[in-house]
Amino acid sequence: SLKEQMRISIQCNNSDNSEDFKKLKENLIKIIQNELTPRQRQIINLYYYHNLTTLEIAKLLNINKSTVSKTKKLAIHNIKRFLQYNFN
Image 1 (cartoon, helix red, strand yellow):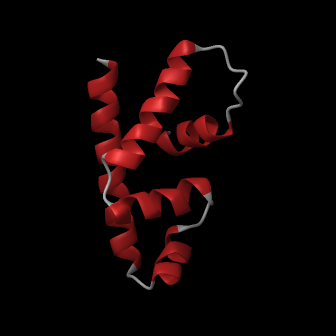
Image 2: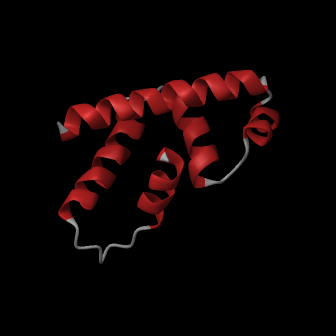
């Protein structure tokens, strides 16, 4: 799943010798920084990097749980779209 791939990417240490993996990690970081809205970045950061649940994020940001879900879904769609563009 994308969630697991992102967690692996985050936890990867610098001694990894796979050029493809390094490229993927670099592109993923660029996409998150440059192609997502501030709210999408915030939710992706809280969900994948801080391992908060959708409900926890909603409470933290004082927004509806469905807004968190929709924003996360759109962010993942954008990430996949940009990764496909960069790797095809």
